[in-house]
Amino acid sequence: MADRIGIAERKYQFIKSIAQKTAEKYGYEPIHTPTLEYSSVFERTLGSDSDVVGKELYKLPDSRNQWMTMRPEGTAAVARALVTNQLEFTLPQKLYYSGPMYRHERPQRGRLRQFEQFGIESMGIPHPAIDVESILIGWRFLNQLPLGSNAKLELHMNTLGDAESRSSYRKALKTYFEHYRDKLSPDSQRRLDTNPLRILDSKSEQDISIVSNAPIADEYLLPEASKHFEFVQTALKDLDIPFTHNRRLVRGLDYYQHTVWEVTCASSELGASQATVLAGGRYDGLTSVLGGKRVLPGVGWGSGIDRLALLLADNKVPIPVTPVPVVIIPETSSETRSRYADDRVYSFAIRVAETIRRYRSAYVVHGSILNDGTAASHPPIDKQLPNLLSKEPQPSRVVIVGNEEMLKSGVTVRNMSTRQQQFVKLDSIQDLL
Image (cartoon, rainbow, N blue to C red; front, side):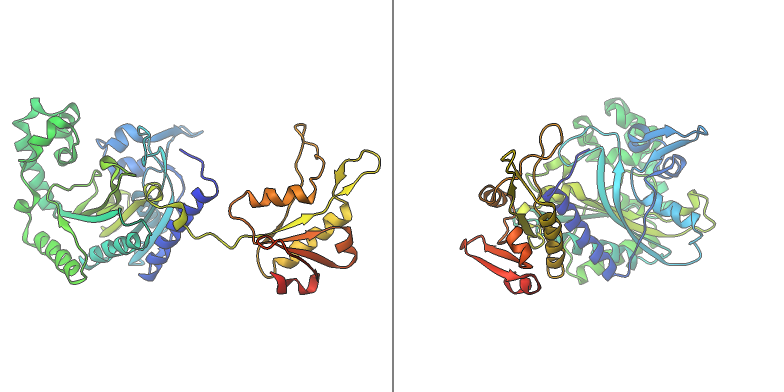
């Protein structure tokens, strides 16, 4: 979990704005789901033996002793929203979302316990054309980001087949891995009894050599499942989208079937273990697990904004036009010799800033405070101007107001590059900005 201030937050906004615009080009609409859901939403869909459910959920009981969970991913929440809002009969539903997700993992670079995600979900379309569209949206989105010449994106794809194909493949994997049970890592031994497909995704050194010789899904695909995946591959080739058919690729959640994919980025900013920047797949029937009345086909992906932000240089993020500072010339007290901003001039400065905002951004430069919270002596102009230049981005123009300017209903505009100043009436200020 981390705070984001200034350029750090602008990176996130920039990435999400590109993702949103890309999704909307393909006819997707926004959806927002609660951060806090009933735990059953995720436990029923993600699989009780999954690492997410077994180790990573943030759970808490409410006042009625019902278990609630802070949202660990977006797909199950969107599927629940379709059921809750009776949208199963208004199809198709093509939706995009963004927001924080929560998993109790070991924090490391690119992997936070609270992480930001953008995702799309499409429900109600069985044809593999929607798999292609979903992959295409993700690929177009990522390739619009100015990630730099050293950030190489790669699309990896596989198929798990339909429910029957996946069941046959699962049995074959169980038979194969059973011969090596004593040599598998403790996690893989547990998965052998619950979901042997997950062993394929193991990063444990003692599992890798065993996994390398395991059966592949292609050998167990029924004709329809094979046809589904062939359509996806052919369509992507026709669109000149480069991809690798990675026969060992699986998704870590129970609801996936047919097409699964991920986009990785080889970059020193992420490292090999955190290289995945987008992952998705098809999940037919997910709504029925949540009590829906129809078995809906679905497909979608999620992308980690935190990792993408690490790949994005600060100077690649668009910065709004620098606002114009309105600086107040202070008065000097005859009694205490301290400087202060006259209330009438202060009020005039507010009006000046509001006038400038008709044309561009502006703000009043306020004085500082003492440790006890009271106002400090207002700094003179020759101290305020250097202070403005020490901040990024630097203003090109500064508007100065004092008692003299107020009485003449005008301002002094200073060019910070040439240091030239010019008086102008307030109603003509646009000409100098």
